[in-house]
Image (cartoon, helix red, strand yellow):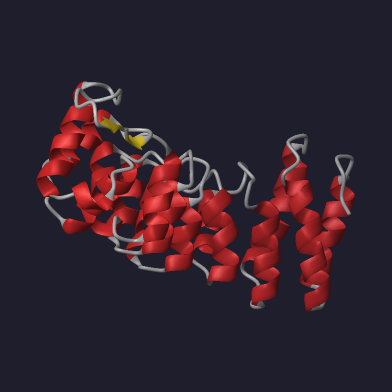
Amino acid sequence: MFNAATSAQKLVKRANALRQRINAKNRIDLAHDIGATYCDASLSKNERQIAQEIVAKLIHDGISSVRAAISQAVATSPHLPRDLAEKLAQDIDEIAIPMLELSPVLNDKLLEAIIESGATDKMNAIARREIVSANLCRRIVATGRKTPVIQLLQNPGAKITNHTMVTIVRVYGDDELVEKAVLDRGELPDEVINNLCELTEAHVVSFVQRYFNLPEHVVNVQKGRNLLKTVKTTSQTTPTDDWWDTSKGAV
């Protein structure tokens, strides 16, 4: 394995080995080794240039397991040129997913194109990124794919706007897994509650029932709206009706 003291001479030796067409197993081993070296911030300019030459050749390798190995090895590197990162991100799932989830050099334009392609596993990876912009969140929700939406809801770094959250409840609110992910994310903002007040979809009423711990026999569209308005105006303290407590249920 390489370490921080790797010399330019050793890197040149590895580059020469690639030119001599070493076998696939050795190229996979090289991918793991060079990944650790490439991510080392202390590399000199010359060393990084040689390491990048090796990385580029592995990224263009004809064997997918070699490309998968180098993708995993360099996915977190801030030094990887964007064109190389994008090539990996647009490869087959096994190769693309580490880059889509972890690479800091990919921009939203490329990620939007991946989302538009409709590839669910790749969308899942994007939804798990450390930071997912509000625009990407909106685009993922608009695809109608449930699992990436759940990944977003479970990701504290996903910038889900109030409008997008309302859309999630409207479109996916009748799904138990999505509902749980919404509730686990924490208290809904007042603006979301206010917008839900205006909805009449049956599954939204059902969501309201569980969100406020309402017994089923008292739930209908109007009661759901009234309760939401009451809770909003009292900042989710006990309503003026003495028969109901929003955290405990019927008193």
